[in-house]
Length: 148
Image (cartoon, rainbow, N blue to C red; front, side, top):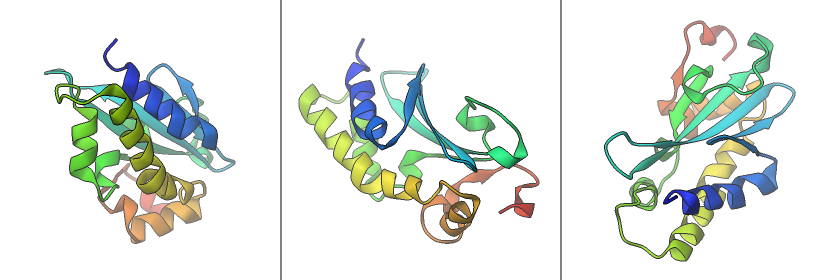
């Protein structure tokens, strides 16, 4: 399967910091928030996207929420400074050696994405991220303003 290199990179970056893989998503839970990272393939070609969702546990129990159903939802590319590089790495139509793609994707996730996720493990942390940098462009579900 061509996406194996992307799955390997996500495993290498996310599993050591507490995410667990189920199907094409990785989940990490705290007492307040479930974080979801999802690898989505484009319908039109070998391009892929990384979706990121935050489920607030106080609003209901959902062990494995889909990112688009989460209370806060965005694409990872909108969170990182290296948007063009991430798009390139997730596009399997672009020629690149698998080992190089894997290494560059792991570094990008560790250096740019994971610091943002680490700030989203509590409702207070999400508030700070919505106000500050990372989650400014995220979609929030109706009624979230009460909590956030």
